[in-house]
Length: 438
Image 1: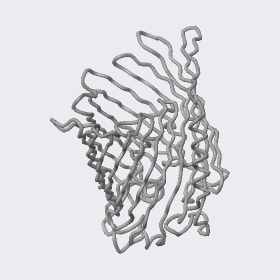
Image 2: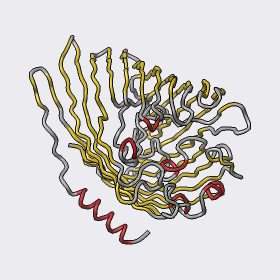
Image 3: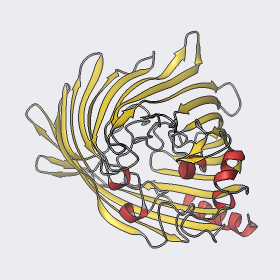
Image 4: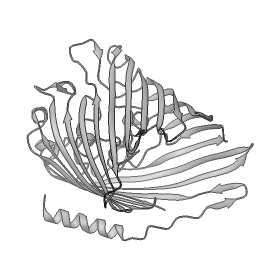
């Protein structure tokens, strides 16, 4: 990677980090209505070499190296009004987004010049201390967003960009929530964007009230219409235990989820689904160090299809989100997670070190060992399941909840399976992702 790329990226990050993005719009009172205008600006810049392990960009195999940039702006207007011993509420937001320079790094999801201006959120609801009823386009996340995290899979043709994740609301929804003293119950109907096949689904989710014993939840969903990745017909059950402390050692916490996918694959001869996805993670917070540091290990497995059976055992990655907990939830790796494996037919061991020199900075080191669960890549057979090893190094900057800047370097070396599908070069990406809220 050229020194000039490093210098230019460092200059951009330095300039943006010194801009005083600390102001915010004032609330506005209009008779009985309270209006809270806000806006978010996102910017992303990437430079990649050895794209797709030397195979080149999918949309132009001659391009082994690429630069990509994206920018988005989302003005929003949340509003509230006291009504019927409760509160009427809602939000309207628009996103303008575009991708430029050479196009999305891997050549799969966006091309240079893609742009979009469209509604992201447009919903209305009513709530009190016990009930919450809402309809329309809105953000909805359960747990850490492994199953229900993002209603949009951003692609250039629909959302004008890919890497920023500028659109995150469900295209349409109806949600009824009941809050008791011990649990929260959500009954939902959702419609995704076109990147997720314009999927329609319904389900129910239960969460305990957050406590010193952790966050526990259970969910059932049924996708009764979906036009991509054999989503149509999936019935899924999700159980999760998050932020669970180790008795006697509060510095250790555990996270785990399991997802069982059943039903019938309506896009593939109505055969039975029998897929399983799960992970276990342990985090240790070493706050006694000069730089408080988190050490973490996670093992995840998302089943692959056994080609010689009359069932579909392939775990469909569904609607996982971005940065529900941290940068690694739930894209697993800046290269494999974003361009190649997508939490399907995948086994990954993940090691993380995240240190905080100050309250405003975090330094991260991630190592991923990626394998296929079954010896094929989306139906292309491989002689082994050994996919790739990947390292992500990053620096995060926080200024309250107004400014977030990530700058990182990702490097991946292909193992035998990836060499058989693509080629044998190392794939590296230098990148920065920024968010400024007003």
